[in-house]
Image (cartoon, rainbow over all chains, first blue to last red; front, side, top):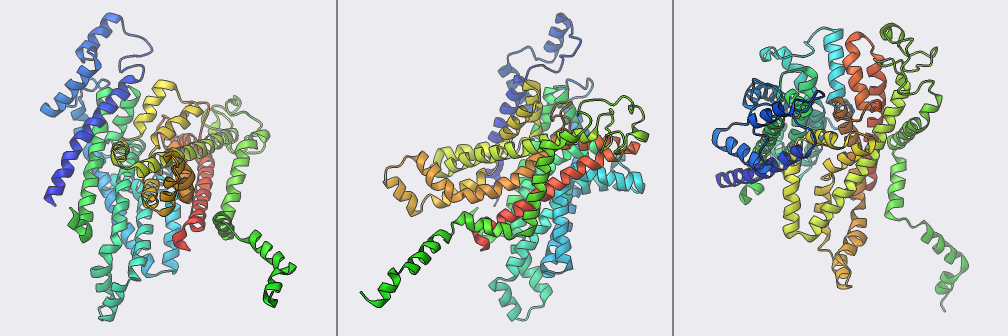
Length: 309
Length: 310
């Protein structure tokens, strides 16, 4: 297991390198730059500015310096559009915000999705089951960018229960709506998947054996059925995390949480190379980490996978 | 000749046999029958057809064009801009005094076109790459899978931004960049299917007949996994519509005055604090109807085509 983890961690390095090189050239290839504006700077000033940020050097030299600074000093460079901050500051300020509601959103997805799926499976073809299907369809057609305005409309504008945006140091009122808006459609996906696999597991021979032994239904469900039933859900969580990370960009923009999504979009508009690149690396690292954790969780649950590691 | 044989050669029997031949059903005819029995799916297809008709012909009853500003209402949007039949703004006007009905028609056109064209194209691209990776295996497969892992971990919004800076944001360009971003659609599932099928006898037979890899992939393997591709396309199309809407919402979508459901919803969401709710309600309703229909169509297709369910 430790071996496997180390091996996986080692593959992250070349992958990240390819990613950096690719995104770097992709961004630089596009016409315009962080300092082109409608009123062009005088050539002399422009040259100075470019020199100040090292943008006058050949591309591969810039790339090398960039990577060297990250490796040696963990420095993602200065922001080109926000004069007095560098990318490290932005990440230090915004990332905890995104991570906080992202975490609660994931908790919401799993803590609501799995029990809902199990209840629907246990009460197969009952009212609960049908309302679960309804919920799954509902969330499929109300993605976060439709759900978020509707939630603000109801909870903020109509009933005045929750603040419609902002962060305020991460008080719980400010976390609820971003977390729920981000997670709802995945929560329903998890519920639907759990329901399906739970139904399948409950009709398998080893559950019949457990019943024949006279085990109480609770023990059967918790000790015997839960683990195998959760495997498909776990595989589903990989792409879900990727989507949630992308979705968080929208949530950051819509709820003005002050998370990194806003900086990402701003950086894209102002062609803030180091900001875009730094945040791209951060988002990708997050993806890799979550996927590694998922794979480890998978190995922990499934002995067949574990023996192969 | 025995009596039984005589009876078999008799005209009625031949006729019956011929009729049986005609009615013997292919996989696709079977699937069509199953799909048509699914009431929700059929209703959804009808809804979708209505939406498409609306997108194509809706502008003919509009009294305003989608970029025209109604100066008599501008500045009084909140009080007089609501939906009404009197002044020809069936869905009201948007923030800038443009007819929302005409804009919703235009937006439906964009969203549906992007969804169907880009969705189909990306799945085809992904399937061809996935099938090749699964068929050839080895180095090529490793390369494709490596590219896949890297690709899905890049936040896709960056591509829209770069593309916009490079080429602009016309409809064709939106479709192109969406296909590029989604080249991984269907890749994994088709790759898996091909890896499963490629060791079967009919592929060996084709190879022994001296067929080229190209022919084997496109003539022998692809038709066998067409059902997977069809199901996957039906899942990808709503996802693409959603993706287009999301990037429009974030402001890197299609160029004004052209619009899409996402762009309209985003405008509506921005102005809802002023009480102009219709600006959110109409585009959102169209979006939701399209998503519901596509969901049930996808569901129906899965039930009709997936051999595991039979």
